[in-house]
Length: 174
Length: 139
Image (cartoon, rainbow over all chains, first blue to last red; front, side, top):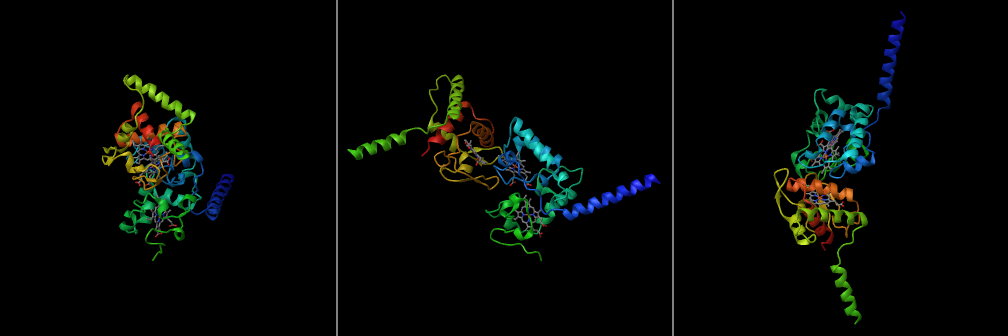
């Protein structure tokens, strides 16, 4: 009997926690704030938020920086371990109360280790309707260039009304 | 007479090499010591050799034609564009961008990465010294 009460209390408690966390759930993804990360991983491109990929993905990215998407992005010594720690501490698993982080997390099978946000199922599905010419144009060049369309991506905000595609404008869902 | 002095001063200031800070001077001196070990005939770093390193097209890491000019442009006082990511790069010339060539750690890191991207290997001490000499003194 006692066991049953405890179990049901536990279930009720976890249900409550679940609903309150989705109630307090925040939009978008947590902004990137670590100054070393912003400097080192924001020098060639937009500093992708850690909450866009799971820990195992960040480990893979950090292990292969000398051949990083065809370019050398190697970081030496202590800086590299500090960056990896920051990424792991803030990866999708840690920020599931952020709506977009949770959606991305849910779309990645536990057997997969994507090294690009743009390869995750959630991302592909959200961006499949954008015409090729809007992506290939010189102001954008690739979907990896988040800031070209999401004007507040650096704040961790990807809401539809903040989208402004160059030479196209706002994105209205039909 | 005044005119002549002004003209002379202008010529002198034009000829004067860019003045690096103490840590960068140490770095350049250590590169020179290292380069002389490998090439005992070497006297000093050379602008013209550096220019060639910077502008000559290679088959880079990705198998495409690439040079330092590809991302930094030929006019080092202007902004460049990272051709891989489409991100703007602030001017490389320290006369146009005072942050450049002030931090040895940054300079070493980018020389290592960028030589790998363009030449598929690290630059030798002489190549690094030559190319820095070119970048900081190019008008």
